[in-house]
Length: 53
Image (cartoon, rainbow, N blue to C red; front, side):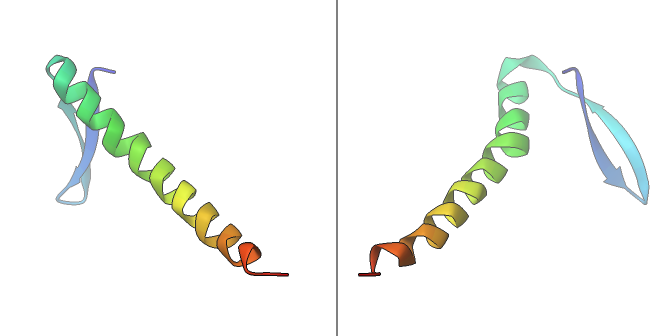
């Protein structure tokens, strides 16, 4: 991974990623946040099953 893409003025622009810290940050923003959302939604859907008897 050497660059990331952003939309600026209705155009897709490639922005170079410099250094391992910036690469890690980009990866966590791209992959980590959706994984947290998926886990949270799974917990919220299973939580009502605990209260069933």
